[in-house]
Amino acid sequence: MPRNTVRTWMTPHPITIHPSDSVLQAYALMKHHRIRRLPVLKDDHLIGIITINDVRSAAPMGNFSLLEHNEYLSGLRVEDVMTTNPLTIEASAHVSEAARLMMKHKFGGMPVTENDRLVGVISEADIFRRTIAEAWAPNDDQALMEGEEHITLLDGTEVQIRPITQEDAERLQASHERLSQETVYDRFMAFRKILPEAELRYLTGLDYDSHMALIATSKEKDEENIVGVARYILLDSEPGTAEFAIVISDPFQRRGLGSLLMQRLTAYAAAHNVKVFLGLTHNDNLRFLRFVQQLGLPVETKKKQGVWEVRLSLSGLQKPNIP
Image (cartoon, rainbow, N blue to C red; front, side, top):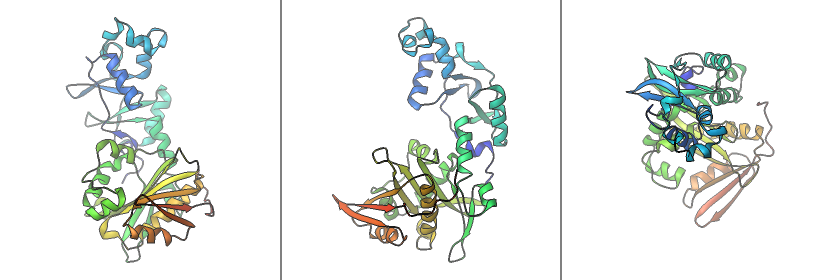
Protein backbone atom coordinates (compact mmCIF):
# COMPACT_ATOMS: atom_id res chain seq x y z
CA MET A 1 0.00 0.00 0.00
CA PRO A 2 1.39 3.47 -0.82
CA ARG A 3 1.96 4.74 2.70
CA ASN A 4 2.91 8.32 1.86
CA THR A 5 0.05 9.37 -0.40
CA VAL A 6 -2.63 11.84 0.56
CA ARG A 7 -5.21 9.08 0.09
CA THR A 8 -3.75 7.10 3.00
CA TRP A 9 -3.98 9.96 5.50
CA MET A 10 -6.97 11.99 4.37
CA THR A 11 -10.41 11.79 5.96
CA PRO A 12 -12.54 10.03 3.32
CA HIS A 13 -16.25 10.65 2.67
CA PRO A 14 -16.20 14.15 4.16
CA ILE A 15 -19.27 15.92 5.45
CA THR A 16 -20.36 18.54 2.89
CA ILE A 17 -22.87 21.33 2.58
CA HIS A 18 -24.84 23.01 -0.25
CA PRO A 19 -24.20 26.67 -1.14
CA SER A 20 -27.86 27.56 -0.53
CA ASP A 21 -27.80 26.19 3.02
CA SER A 22 -27.57 28.73 5.81
CA VAL A 23 -24.38 29.67 7.59
CA LEU A 24 -26.12 28.55 10.77
CA GLN A 25 -26.51 25.06 9.27
CA ALA A 26 -22.81 25.03 8.42
CA TYR A 27 -21.94 26.12 11.94
CA ALA A 28 -24.20 23.45 13.46
CA LEU A 29 -22.55 20.72 11.35
CA MET A 30 -19.05 21.84 12.27
CA LYS A 31 -19.96 22.10 15.93
CA HIS A 32 -21.66 18.68 16.01
CA HIS A 33 -18.86 16.84 14.20
CA ARG A 34 -16.04 18.87 15.80
CA ILE A 35 -14.53 19.90 12.47
CA ARG A 36 -13.30 23.24 11.20
CA ARG A 37 -14.19 23.21 7.51
CA LEU A 38 -16.87 21.96 5.12
CA PRO A 39 -16.50 21.44 1.36
CA VAL A 40 -19.34 23.09 -0.52
CA LEU A 41 -20.90 20.94 -3.24
CA LYS A 42 -23.40 21.83 -5.95
CA ASP A 43 -24.57 19.10 -8.33
CA ASP A 44 -21.78 16.92 -6.89
CA HIS A 45 -19.12 19.45 -7.94
CA LEU A 46 -16.83 21.18 -5.47
CA ILE A 47 -17.42 24.92 -5.76
CA GLY A 48 -16.09 26.22 -2.46
CA ILE A 49 -15.17 25.67 1.16
CA ILE A 50 -16.51 27.25 4.33
CA THR A 51 -14.46 27.28 7.52
CA ILE A 52 -15.17 28.03 11.14
CA ASN A 53 -13.30 31.31 10.65
CA ASP A 54 -15.72 32.25 7.86
CA VAL A 55 -18.59 31.68 10.28
CA ARG A 56 -16.82 33.64 13.00
CA SER A 57 -16.25 36.55 10.59
CA ALA A 58 -19.97 36.64 9.84
CA ALA A 59 -20.93 36.73 13.52
CA PRO A 60 -21.13 40.11 15.26
CA MET A 61 -17.84 40.65 17.12
CA GLY A 62 -17.03 37.02 16.37
CA ASN A 63 -19.65 35.86 18.85
CA PHE A 64 -21.36 32.66 17.67
CA SER A 65 -24.31 33.09 20.02
CA LEU A 66 -25.06 36.49 18.45
CA LEU A 67 -25.04 34.87 15.03
CA GLU A 68 -27.68 32.40 16.17
CA HIS A 69 -29.98 35.14 17.43
CA ASN A 70 -29.45 37.79 14.75
CA GLU A 71 -32.51 37.90 12.48
CA TYR A 72 -30.61 39.23 9.46
CA LEU A 73 -27.57 37.02 9.77
CA SER A 74 -29.65 33.90 10.42
CA GLY A 75 -30.65 34.09 6.73
CA LEU A 76 -27.04 34.33 5.54
CA ARG A 77 -26.22 31.56 3.09
CA VAL A 78 -23.05 29.52 2.73
CA GLU A 79 -22.38 30.93 -0.72
CA ASP A 80 -22.29 34.43 0.78
CA VAL A 81 -19.22 33.73 2.93
CA MET A 82 -17.49 30.66 1.46
CA THR A 83 -14.17 30.68 -0.39
CA THR A 84 -14.84 29.91 -4.04
CA ASN A 85 -12.61 27.72 -6.23
CA PRO A 86 -10.61 26.42 -3.27
CA LEU A 87 -7.14 25.01 -3.67
CA THR A 88 -7.29 21.19 -3.85
CA ILE A 89 -4.84 18.32 -3.94
CA GLU A 90 -5.00 14.97 -5.72
CA ALA A 91 -5.42 11.81 -3.66
CA SER A 92 -2.38 10.31 -5.36
CA ALA A 93 -0.09 13.21 -4.39
CA HIS A 94 2.65 12.75 -1.79
CA VAL A 95 1.49 13.79 1.67
CA SER A 96 4.46 16.17 1.96
CA GLU A 97 3.01 18.21 -0.91
CA ALA A 98 -0.19 18.68 1.10
CA ALA A 99 1.90 19.83 4.07
CA ARG A 100 3.87 22.24 1.87
CA LEU A 101 0.73 23.80 0.41
CA MET A 102 -0.90 24.19 3.81
CA MET A 103 2.20 25.90 5.18
CA LYS A 104 2.58 28.13 2.13
CA HIS A 105 -1.03 29.33 2.11
CA LYS A 106 -1.43 29.29 5.90
CA PHE A 107 -4.56 27.19 6.09
CA GLY A 108 -5.31 24.15 8.19
CA GLY A 109 -6.81 21.79 5.63
CA MET A 110 -7.78 21.31 2.03
CA PRO A 111 -10.15 19.22 -0.13
CA VAL A 112 -8.81 16.08 -1.81
CA THR A 113 -9.95 15.22 -5.33
CA GLU A 114 -9.63 12.33 -7.74
CA ASN A 115 -10.69 12.68 -11.38
CA ASP A 116 -12.22 16.05 -10.44
CA ARG A 117 -14.42 14.46 -7.78
CA LEU A 118 -14.22 15.21 -4.07
CA VAL A 119 -13.00 12.11 -2.21
CA GLY A 120 -11.81 13.51 1.12
CA VAL A 121 -10.20 16.30 3.09
CA ILE A 122 -6.74 16.43 4.61
CA SER A 123 -5.83 18.62 7.57
CA GLU A 124 -2.89 19.52 9.78
CA ALA A 125 -4.17 16.97 12.27
CA ASP A 126 -3.95 14.25 9.60
CA ILE A 127 -0.34 15.21 8.86
CA PHE A 128 0.42 15.06 12.58
CA ARG A 129 -1.18 11.60 12.87
CA ARG A 130 0.93 10.39 9.97
CA THR A 131 4.11 11.58 11.65
CA ILE A 132 3.29 9.68 14.83
CA ALA A 133 2.03 6.53 13.10
CA GLU A 134 5.08 6.09 10.91
CA ALA A 135 7.35 6.19 13.94
CA TRP A 136 5.57 3.49 15.92
CA ALA A 137 8.92 1.72 16.22
CA PRO A 138 8.95 -1.69 14.61
CA ASN A 139 12.08 -3.78 14.82
CA ASP A 140 14.42 -2.27 12.22
CA ASP A 141 15.31 1.05 10.62
CA GLN A 142 13.71 0.28 7.25
CA ALA A 143 10.46 -0.73 8.90
CA LEU A 144 10.62 2.46 10.95
CA MET A 145 10.79 4.53 7.79
CA GLU A 146 7.92 2.66 6.17
CA GLY A 147 5.77 2.41 9.30
CA GLU A 148 5.26 -1.30 8.82
CA GLU A 149 6.83 -4.64 9.68
CA HIS A 150 6.86 -7.84 7.65
CA ILE A 151 6.90 -11.03 9.69
CA THR A 152 6.59 -14.76 9.06
CA LEU A 153 4.29 -16.84 11.25
CA LEU A 154 5.29 -20.24 12.60
CA ASP A 155 3.64 -22.01 9.65
CA GLY A 156 5.46 -19.84 7.09
CA THR A 157 2.60 -17.45 6.34
CA GLU A 158 3.76 -13.88 5.70
CA VAL A 159 1.85 -11.00 7.26
CA GLN A 160 2.42 -7.30 7.66
CA ILE A 161 1.93 -5.40 10.92
CA ARG A 162 1.32 -1.66 10.84
CA PRO A 163 -0.81 1.05 12.47
CA ILE A 164 -4.36 1.29 11.20
CA THR A 165 -5.30 4.35 9.11
CA GLN A 166 -8.59 5.85 7.97
CA GLU A 167 -8.05 4.29 4.57
CA ASP A 168 -8.52 0.89 6.24
CA ALA A 169 -12.21 1.48 7.04
CA GLU A 170 -13.50 -0.71 4.20
CA ARG A 171 -10.93 -3.40 4.96
CA LEU A 172 -11.96 -3.38 8.62
CA GLN A 173 -15.62 -3.75 7.69
CA ALA A 174 -14.82 -6.62 5.33
CA SER A 175 -12.70 -8.29 8.00
CA HIS A 176 -15.52 -8.00 10.52
CA GLU A 177 -18.02 -9.55 8.12
CA ARG A 178 -15.75 -12.56 7.64
CA LEU A 179 -15.57 -13.31 11.37
CA SER A 180 -17.54 -16.23 12.78
CA GLN A 181 -20.38 -15.41 15.16
CA GLU A 182 -18.37 -16.91 18.00
CA THR A 183 -15.38 -14.65 17.32
CA VAL A 184 -17.62 -11.59 17.02
CA TYR A 185 -19.30 -12.41 20.33
CA ASP A 186 -15.94 -12.98 22.03
CA ARG A 187 -14.76 -9.55 20.85
CA PHE A 188 -17.91 -7.44 21.39
CA MET A 189 -19.96 -9.55 23.81
CA ALA A 190 -22.78 -9.16 21.29
CA PHE A 191 -23.66 -10.39 17.79
CA ARG A 192 -23.00 -7.67 15.21
CA LYS A 193 -23.21 -8.30 11.48
CA ILE A 194 -21.62 -4.99 10.49
CA LEU A 195 -19.84 -2.05 12.09
CA PRO A 196 -21.79 1.23 11.79
CA GLU A 197 -20.11 3.94 9.69
CA ALA A 198 -19.62 6.25 12.68
CA GLU A 199 -17.90 3.45 14.59
CA LEU A 200 -15.67 2.66 11.61
CA ARG A 201 -14.53 6.28 11.56
CA TYR A 202 -13.78 6.08 15.28
CA LEU A 203 -11.92 2.78 15.01
CA THR A 204 -9.71 3.99 12.15
CA GLY A 205 -9.27 7.70 12.93
CA LEU A 206 -6.81 7.51 15.81
CA ASP A 207 -4.42 9.90 17.52
CA TYR A 208 -1.85 7.07 18.02
CA ASP A 209 -1.35 8.11 21.62
CA SER A 210 -4.52 7.83 23.72
CA HIS A 211 -6.02 5.55 21.06
CA MET A 212 -3.79 3.12 19.17
CA ALA A 213 -4.46 0.09 16.97
CA LEU A 214 -2.11 -2.22 15.14
CA ILE A 215 -3.39 -4.41 12.33
CA ALA A 216 -2.01 -7.53 10.71
CA THR A 217 -2.71 -7.88 7.01
CA SER A 218 -2.27 -10.68 4.53
CA LYS A 219 -2.35 -10.47 0.75
CA GLU A 220 -4.64 -12.67 -1.31
CA LYS A 221 -4.82 -12.14 -5.08
CA ASP A 222 -3.09 -8.76 -4.64
CA GLU A 223 -5.78 -7.69 -2.13
CA GLU A 224 -4.68 -6.57 1.33
CA ASN A 225 -6.95 -8.18 3.93
CA ILE A 226 -6.99 -7.41 7.65
CA VAL A 227 -6.53 -10.64 9.60
CA GLY A 228 -5.91 -9.26 13.09
CA VAL A 229 -6.41 -6.10 15.16
CA ALA A 230 -4.95 -5.22 18.57
CA ARG A 231 -6.11 -1.95 20.12
CA TYR A 232 -5.93 0.12 23.27
CA ILE A 233 -7.88 3.20 24.39
CA LEU A 234 -6.84 5.25 27.42
CA LEU A 235 -9.44 5.54 30.16
CA ASP A 236 -10.24 9.02 31.46
CA SER A 237 -11.45 7.49 34.72
CA GLU A 238 -8.17 5.69 35.46
CA PRO A 239 -4.97 7.57 34.61
CA GLY A 240 -2.31 5.28 33.19
CA THR A 241 -4.85 2.56 32.38
CA ALA A 242 -6.03 1.65 28.90
CA GLU A 243 -8.74 -0.77 27.82
CA PHE A 244 -7.40 -3.23 25.28
CA ALA A 245 -8.97 -5.63 22.82
CA ILE A 246 -7.71 -8.08 20.22
CA VAL A 247 -9.44 -10.00 17.47
CA ILE A 248 -7.90 -12.48 15.04
CA SER A 249 -9.65 -13.75 11.91
CA ASP A 250 -10.76 -17.35 12.35
CA PRO A 251 -8.35 -18.91 9.79
CA PHE A 252 -5.40 -17.15 11.50
CA GLN A 253 -6.20 -18.16 15.07
CA ARG A 254 -3.78 -20.43 16.98
CA ARG A 255 -0.90 -19.51 14.66
CA GLY A 256 0.98 -17.12 16.95
CA LEU A 257 -0.39 -13.93 15.40
CA GLY A 258 -2.27 -12.78 18.49
CA SER A 259 0.85 -12.99 20.64
CA LEU A 260 2.91 -11.07 18.07
CA LEU A 261 0.36 -8.26 17.89
CA MET A 262 0.08 -8.03 21.66
CA GLN A 263 3.87 -7.95 22.10
CA ARG A 264 4.09 -4.94 19.83
CA LEU A 265 1.02 -3.21 21.26
CA THR A 266 2.18 -3.57 24.86
CA ALA A 267 5.66 -2.28 23.96
CA TYR A 268 4.13 0.74 22.23
CA ALA A 269 1.77 1.37 25.14
CA ALA A 270 4.56 1.19 27.71
CA ALA A 271 6.54 3.74 25.68
CA HIS A 272 3.50 6.03 25.87
CA ASN A 273 3.27 5.78 29.67
CA VAL A 274 0.46 3.23 29.85
CA LYS A 275 0.89 1.26 33.07
CA VAL A 276 -2.05 -1.15 32.97
CA PHE A 277 -4.07 -2.88 30.26
CA LEU A 278 -7.69 -3.61 31.19
CA GLY A 279 -9.56 -6.28 29.23
CA LEU A 280 -13.21 -7.27 29.52
CA THR A 281 -14.81 -10.43 28.19
CA HIS A 282 -17.86 -12.58 28.77
CA ASN A 283 -18.05 -15.38 31.29
CA ASP A 284 -17.46 -18.24 28.81
CA ASN A 285 -14.46 -16.81 26.93
CA LEU A 286 -11.87 -19.08 28.51
CA ARG A 287 -9.70 -18.83 25.37
CA PHE A 288 -9.10 -15.16 26.13
CA LEU A 289 -8.14 -15.91 29.73
CA ARG A 290 -5.65 -18.56 28.64
CA PHE A 291 -4.28 -16.19 25.98
CA VAL A 292 -3.50 -13.34 28.40
CA GLN A 293 -1.98 -15.73 30.93
CA GLN A 294 0.48 -16.91 28.27
CA LEU A 295 1.71 -13.39 27.45
CA GLY A 296 4.22 -13.48 30.31
CA LEU A 297 2.94 -10.29 31.97
CA PRO A 298 1.70 -9.94 35.56
CA VAL A 299 -2.06 -10.56 35.33
CA GLU A 300 -5.02 -10.24 37.68
CA THR A 301 -8.45 -11.63 36.87
CA LYS A 302 -11.77 -11.30 38.60
CA LYS A 303 -15.39 -11.79 37.66
CA LYS A 304 -18.00 -9.04 37.95
CA GLN A 305 -21.63 -9.79 37.13
CA GLY A 306 -20.77 -12.48 34.60
CA VAL A 307 -17.94 -10.49 32.98
CA TRP A 308 -14.26 -11.27 33.38
CA GLU A 309 -12.07 -8.26 34.18
CA VAL A 310 -8.42 -8.82 33.27
CA ARG A 311 -5.64 -6.44 34.25
CA LEU A 312 -2.16 -6.71 32.76
CA SER A 313 0.73 -4.78 34.32
CA LEU A 314 3.03 -3.12 31.79
CA SER A 315 5.29 -1.49 34.37
CA GLY A 316 8.14 -3.96 33.90
CA LEU A 317 8.31 -3.66 30.12
CA GLN A 318 11.42 -2.09 28.62
CA LYS A 319 10.51 1.12 26.86
CA PRO A 320 11.78 1.37 23.28
CA ASN A 321 12.73 4.76 21.88
CA ILE A 322 9.35 5.84 20.50
CA PRO A 323 8.64 9.53 19.98
